[in-house]
Amino acid sequence: MSRGVFWRVYARWYDALWDTGLTAAVARRVVQEVPPELPVIELGAGTGLVTRELAAARRVVRACEPDPDMRARLVARDLDVEQVTDESIEECHPPAGDCCVVAVNVLHLVADVPACLEHLRWMAGPHGRVVVVVPTAQATLGRVARAHRSAGAGATHSVLFLLAHVVLGPLAALAGVRLSPAPLARPSLVGVVGDVQEVHVLDGPDRPIDGWARAVTSVHAVTHQCQL
Image 1 (cartoon, one colour):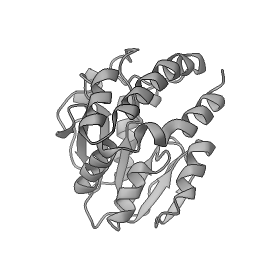
Image 2 (cartoon, rainbow, N blue to C red):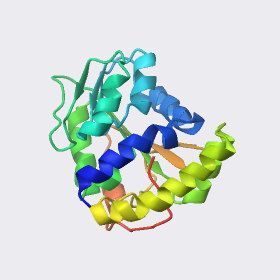
Image 3 (cartoon, rainbow, N blue to C red):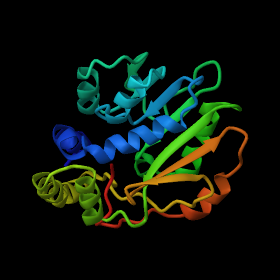
Image 4 (tube, helix red, strand yellow):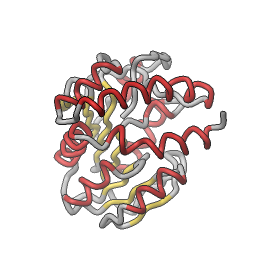
């Protein structure tokens, strides 16, 4: 299976699986960490579940999503954002001044996480900020399903969520897509949402990347972890 086919399938089911109170809580926490004076570059914006909250908070947002099927659903939301682009993390370049770079559950899709974090911090600028969300080490498939339910999702959603990921996991492996992120260190941890999502902040002048690098020396394929 090609990556394109996998993302086409995942995009079709994405909102049904992830447009819940849990995701909204994560998005609201991200908004809290974005300085209001900084423009936002959101990387891996997907179908716009976090973008929606950023736009509602009147942040100036450039939403970047390289997958055409995900991006089509983002565009269809008709959000009040400055721009929607097809830029990948590697292709994305910063504005002229400082900015806030937001990356919610996308780090497991890059081969070199420490180098990616250095790139994100470079993008943010010397007085900018990077806001990263990753699953906690305890974010098993069952725990995430329970977190969705605790945030208001019904029993039907729990069944759909579990069954969908039982199918999507092997499809992702066939397509060469990692849905299981590597563990990260905690020098920049600012909060946890629903016991399954960690919010990290890297400010421009900080030098915490070495701490992250030591925690991300390899990517572990943990079949029961999952991505938001």
